[in-house]
Length: 84
Image (cartoon, rainbow, N blue to C red; front, side, top):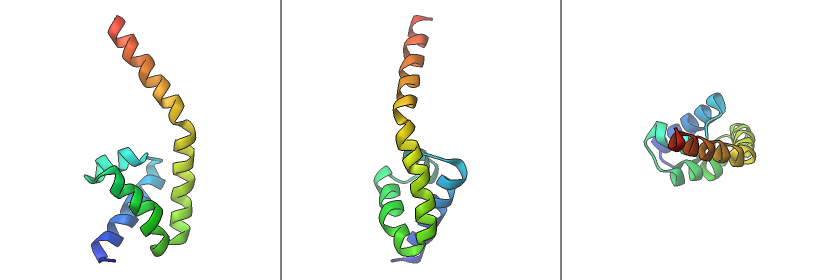
């Protein structure tokens, strides 16, 4: 694996852990696709740093469990803004 990919993977992982960011937010922050973030985190990070991969997985699992709540809030705000 190329060195810049390893560095990016670690940076993205650390960002997700520190900010509890979603894959989408991390992709936007680093200017890469969601697919790239996902591949970095789920495949490449396991080869680089298993402990860091575990920590990131905990954050992503938490985000996944909460996504239906965020979606409902976004819909509520959308219709609230429409009626105002």
